[in-house]
Length: 336
Image 1 (cartoon, rainbow, N blue to C red):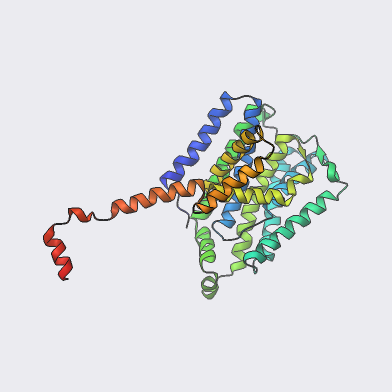
Image 2: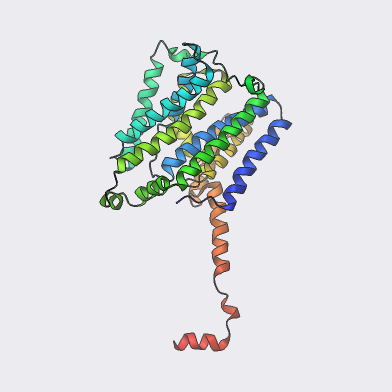
């Protein structure tokens, strides 16, 4: 069950605040890293909602992310739709796609569920890759950014766009936390813990799974629409299964089932990737080794391990200190 602890609050505020400060004191490339980290964190949080709390390990979230990007790009570039309407449409489209995936795969579990979501992702990838209207392998260029000039914000400015991405991340976290703390979220966790029992009490399980996937898809699509605006270009590479694999690794790396952990993992992953890739082209091997160490060390992830250590320490402090018990009390316990 999700609980917004003091530690979670401190960590997410530190991430958001640190991102804002870093944006003002870094150059163009640094701002691009902030945007990349924010969009990856949004995608990771959306996946953690269904994987960490619903037990639905998905390999199609990269495709949902890409569908959000393509929906925004296609509507603005090909049909001249206003960016704000296209942004909303991207969220709605990915919510519907996610709900369909969740409904169809609701009766599958384990590896069968994973493979089913992978199949949906691959179908989306092939559809876009072979679409001449959407540019095929060449993708779509000239994607505009949201026009917020009415409120005095120019998103063509890299600083403003980085702050916009951070604000979107904050909004996504608040929405995800609200959903997971609600009765719906508690029911979702209950389905993950004991689906048979939830069915026995008359719960229509597939409704909850479809709704959870729909909400998760909407958040992932929001991140995709922002990613399309960052590069002002979209290509089928956004939908390849490796994107889904990467975000799943990020969720595990940060701490699956913690919500804030995936955001931590995304930030560390992006900056670690760029630092290592500047030294060697074999950065994938080093990143993979770090992930293996994380799993072998307990599988709790960066944030998850810290949270576990703090809670374990508190539990030990609450235990009565046997050295302070009087000899008479110890003798009474022995005879009892």
